[in-house]
Length: 556
Image (cartoon, helix red, strand yellow):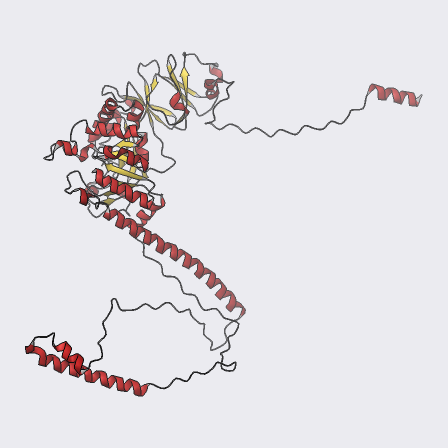
């Protein structure tokens, strides 16, 4: 009975066969805030569920960063612009005003500006060459060098920028340096806010002035304009080589000193013993070659006297004969003092005993002197700092491009560039930027108009030609309030073939690259305009700062 009940229990509870356990799935990593949503999920729904996200409903967008966003086309009612940490991360075509999820599930901040007709999203403008915040002492200082940073010469309490910010949309100004000296820098990119004023600055490029539009010269002398820059780059290379040698010698010194201390720790000195010191290479005190007086003889004296006029030959003869007697006496003394040298073959008994090959005390290597200007150009050669060179003529620009190619300059910008449009293809081949400064040319000039192309449309035509060739272009005023004329030049460039995307880039995003702002924190700020940003009737109505929308009227 016991066995039957046991078998019945087995039949009721069949044995479970052991199955191999499925491997545990690795926990899926959370998508980064900038990661695009999956195809199955509505992109707007994806961003609505994200915290610390700003979603703006706008009518149009004038400029987008390079990438997939440039191909987005607006919907029936415009765009949904997605911002995270002040950066535009997505653009979604907007078909209607309804949201795909209820308000209770929305964690992002949604602001609908499409009800305002003509609400256009655009990056804030940047004056790529300005004298804002520059002190009067720095404007008149002619002794500034490339080794002195410009940040110490800025005056944050100046208020001249307010009109440009509230009416024209300029939220940043690049201050290259004083207009007096030929070499200044590094410059500073100053960002401003109507409420808080001076927000801060970032280091820019070294500025060097090689020529001006009115400088005289011909085709043969224009290629020699870059000689000062070539000389500085050559000195910077020698300076870098000297510091590299010093670092190498310093590493060798530390190694030898470690061995020296370890040896004498095991073998301490006995009373009366001295440590051998490594001899330093002796330098000759003579700065130049000094001619030796030849051995004088009566025949040589007669030849020398023929070079002198007859009236002074007797006086010169007495001096030469006296010198000849002194030479003969010195030779006799030298022969008498000289002893015959007997060379002996070295034997084991005469060899000095060396106790354990004691190392000599190493000498500390000589440290080269610090030169702030050469230090700045050394960073330029290393690609850690940009270089802006003011130059105008086509021949001068070609000579500069050749110098940049030979020295492998990475971040080079041509400022001024009056005839840069003539050599646009060569500039693009060397990957050089161009900074156009309309104030560089005088309004009235005695030079022929065809030679310098001094006309109202010149800068717009130059900008359009360079942009169509693929050259990054930025516009700078060269002053303070003159920046209000730059949007009109960018708008006029559209009549010569430039697109609206290119025209907006001249005034904002391209300026960061052209001015040599290499910091990863550098990003364009954003404004909401009442219409087309290049139209003189439109005004900025909202400003986006750190994913927070601020009214410009409240700031005023």
